[in-house]
Amino acid sequence: MDVRTKDIAALGRRVAAHQDAALERLARPSATDRLQAIYRKEAALSLRARAAPSPRRLGFALAAACVAASALFFAMSRPSDPLTSLMYRVDGSPGAVGRWVAADTSQVGLDFSDGSRVDLAPGTRARVTEVGPLGAGVLLERGSLHVRVVHRDDTRWVVAGGPFEVHVIGTEFDVTWDTEAEELAVSMSAGRVRVQGPCVEPPGRAVAAPESVRLTCTAPRAAAPQAPPPAVAPTASPAAEPPALVPSASAGAPAPAPPPSPPARAEAPSAVVAPSESWRSHLAAGELGEALADVERLGIDTVLGRASGAELVDLGSAARLSRKPSVAARFYEAARHRFAGSDAAAVAAYHLGRMAFDGRGAWAEAERWFAVYLAERPRGALAPEALGRSIECARNLKLHARARELAARYLAAYPNGAHAGLAATLAGGAD
Image (cartoon, rainbow, N blue to C red; front, side):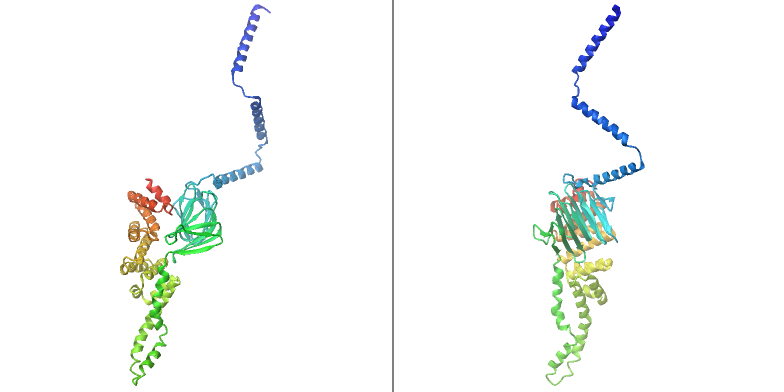
């Protein structure tokens, strides 16, 4: 080996020594880490080797993907997962907060991402008014719901029907709002709820399975029919009245003189009082359709001048539910004019607003009537719904300042009410 070759070999050794020293200074993974890396690499190679694209394996993969997608949507059934907007589905399609859902001829199901479910019976109309981190709010316009809420320690669900609110933690129950009788019915299958309302003593009525309750704030309906019986009772049997009068008059000699007068007086009451008694008895039984039919046979003008305020409101509701809005308006307006300042007049104003709202979409007219009700009965049983609908009217009319003002009033008075979600959105400045 010549001198040049020795020098090159020595240079190579020095370079190798410097490289070894540099490598020693670098942070190297431990033996355990290197082994784990080797295992991961081997596992990846094994998976790729087994992943032959056969049709059977492809089908299994698609099925697994579907299961994973379903699990992703319903993962919020775990207590740590909160609800957020739009996290519910209407018969499989995405749902939206504030949108009406109608079950016309068949049941409609609402599936929530916390695992809860609300089924609308045929003929039911409802909407989800709020979806938040702790639960949801559902407004029942009419009909029946079957509600199953998954229990969590901090659940806050509210189902509203008319002036009532059913507060739920975790349970299963049926709730019905009867628009004719203005009555809420709750039937428990499991758990317990608390029903609150203007005619329910605070903190509300607790209802536990298997209990069922019916609640209404319309006490005048039961009391109104009590007035007619004393006046009707003497003439209830017109055939018996003339014989009673004739003997008393025939104590003296002139027996023929009395008969001409009693028949004249007896025939008029028998033609008028009998139908009157009929429609009133139907109202007392909550049979609004039958009562309206009797009134139409008797003559609406006759009843407009003789019915009580509560009866006029009930007959207006009967006509409204029979899709006779012009007839309903006559009864409601008669209650307003004849019984100004009464509860019946205020309720009539609310229903006039409701007809404009639901029947014609006449938002300005509807809000005027709701404002009348709120002015006359600011703490009335229908005040939460009247104020909530007023917010919707202002929003639909694009009166943003008015909507924010009404929303602020609503949140101050009913922070957990059925329209609280909409009010919070508008009060925050959203259009």
